[in-house]
Image (tube, rainbow, N blue to C red):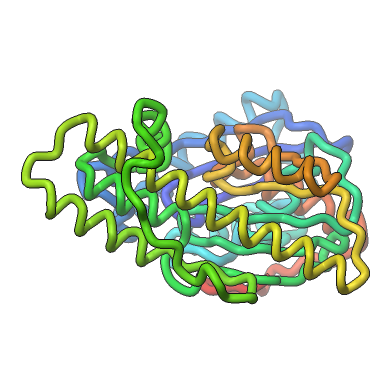
Length: 334
């Protein structure tokens, strides 16, 4: 029985997973306090985690219909993320592990995302994973549990961060991803010719800051931004993001084929994986390469403790040892 904590950014989450890998409880509290600032304020996030956990920890046990003594393993996200936020969740999980004389597993947030689609899909190793979150845009080949190779990543803004910044430029609010997706449905994706950074580079890295700058210039050029212009900018921006990621997935598949890998599964993970337009585009691409495209359950796309519990479950199953002395690392690598 695993009790998991996720507090890497502005979602406070707990989950309880039983010995069969079934979720008994899963709570995600998205902190609303950051909306008026247009982004996450680290100090506020840390304080809110501390307040919210005091409510949702007993709520989790009640939801799972178990007592604290029934928990066999405690785990928490220990990086990457905001250092103050990571300390709150991991310290509480460690304290509960010590007081109940139970093991503690430190979990990498990125590994949680990479393994999240295996909760509801049987993926064939090795598989290609595209990680799209507010803080990361990366391509991995997942060779097995605990065996990951980073193929490419963003050299500047992450894709989720770009959505947030463009949404702010358009006066839409925070978080930006769902808001841009909503108004983009009403816009013309061919209205504005936005740049494609690193288009002719043969590596698998990304760049998004140039698109954000182009949108910034567009908003300054139009002294009066109508709803139509907003919709058209959002549609053009979203379309360009999809185009850039598609290009890198194609390059990754071709590169892996040359290296002798047979990829049968592609998965899109992270909060941006909830974007329906993006998923449809990648579905068409995967079919062209005779691959199956999978995603995690919607509740496992954003930052959540269920994927942390699931990762802990997989790690202990293959014999990886707990580590109570592990220190949080805001820049933890995979």
